[in-house]
Image (cartoon, rainbow, N blue to C red; front, side, top):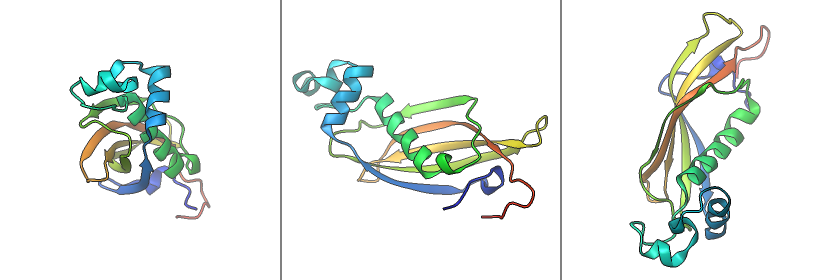
Length: 154
């Protein structure tokens, strides 16, 4: 498996992270604990809402996206964490039965001027549903260690 270092990211690069099926049970469980608005946890209330049926919390959508980024890149990388996010957009609702497909798009790479052992990668995570419709985006920054001398290029 590839180990991701700062040098492995390039502007415009898109990394497909696969798909994840969304269930009603997890929508309700997440929302009950973290975002208990009626349209996330109650069928009748959701039917009367702008969503028309139970919809996943946007925070749940972001959490699922985060998990896919961690599994697809960060767990096997030189990640040093993140200084934060600049933008989150919930474009379309996510419903039970949807499949989220997530991609990691590198927007910018910049080596640190003050710490030569690392650099910053600005990325946009894009989630689409099974119909190819964009449902959410997350834009932020990640810090990655530089490839150590003698480490093999991937």
